[in-house]
Length: 108
Image 1 (cartoon, rainbow, N blue to C red):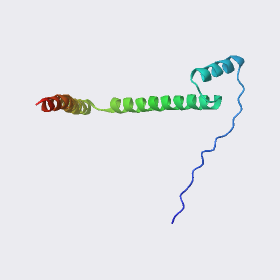
Image 2: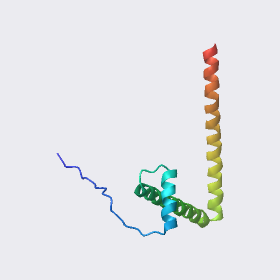
Image 3: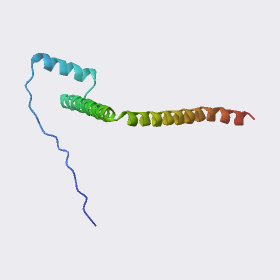
Image 4: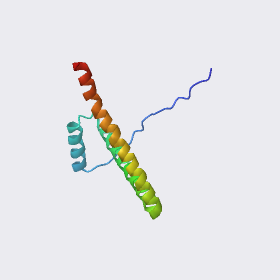
């Protein structure tokens, strides 16, 4: 029997020095968001910022990819996009018809 590796997520205490305006703001925000503590609020703010930066990085990567395509590759990609959009529209249309079919079957 192998032992599972235990990952520790111990938190680390950090001391900050903030202006009185910042302290007032963060305490008001804590109340507004019903955050259990200032630490929890700051952690949430950091995670939100991290998530926003990852989205910006992803957006930049996608933009760089599409900017690197040749005109022929762009045309092919657009064609595949139309095929996918048509397929999705047909699928959604079928989904919309199912409840109607079931309603008619129930009434009969």
